[in-house]
Image (tube, rainbow over all chains, first blue to last red; front, side, top):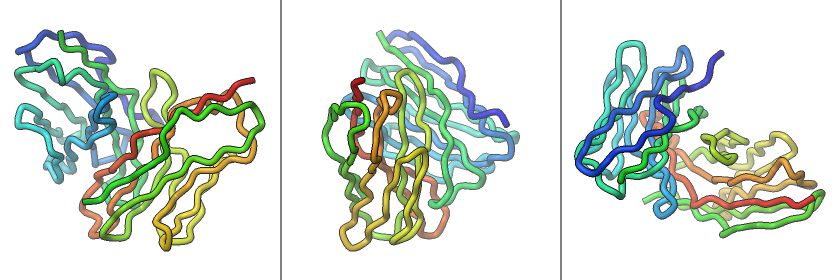
Length: 114
Length: 115
């Protein structure tokens, strides 16, 4: 079974631009979560989607948004990019969510904002 | 709120040495506990997990026991290899209600194993 895939793997943008990242979960998984990883703040939860609905949201500004499609694929969007948005963005999927389930992570998208 | 504290790194060991990475947590409910590993340039891989008190998770020679009385989930391995060099993250997930999949991570511990 294929793992979680994320595209693109690397991205360079300039301040003020917007960016869209994509995540394809493991086949059959309906829950998709997004995390931001930076050297200063570590790994932080952005949001979780299940059955095309945002089920949980972390403490990030409204510039960070996401959505999930009927095939469970998910996208996250960051508008008006700031230098501090440079990070590794990780997507994780699980069967239906719930604290006891294992989340399987993709390789991440590394975003650099200049 | 819920939080995870793990020991600062880097931890530098010689091959075949014993490893312990300390992890303690604060949670209002009854979390599931996880250890994830991140190799350079890659995403996170689940190493092991435990979903209730006194459970022991194990994988690839690594072990961790869910200790509710000390709110700890220390990672141990009896004999490390160079290939174990990576960053290790302790994490918790609130299991109450089942309607959330949010993981809270510790800061990560870099392990460097020398031949």
